[in-house]
Image (cartoon, rainbow, N blue to C red; front, side, top):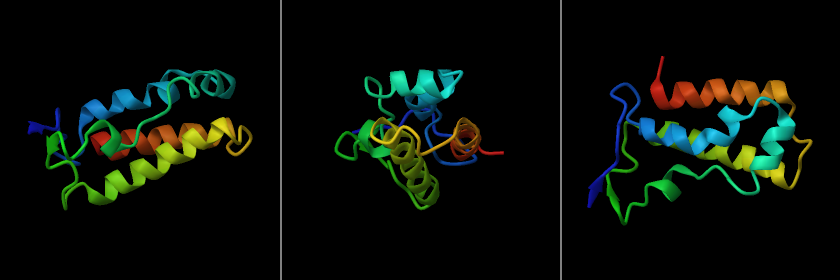
Length: 105
């Protein structure tokens, strides 16, 4: 089994998982995000780090953060079917929360 890469000491979440959020962080507006999401959906944490391939994917230390990151991924991905569900300001707040959940502080 592989180890989950680049585990943050403060959160227990892989810093590498930030790359899965590229559609949200690389978009400068909602329209760009809506264009990218159908081709590049944000993977849930366990989709990227399968417990059949990686050891210690979800731990007591990171369980609540991963749960919330998965909720946020589902929320952002829901824009594909419901493009008006979130305003750009709400998506910017999600970006802040994702960064905090992955890196801490």
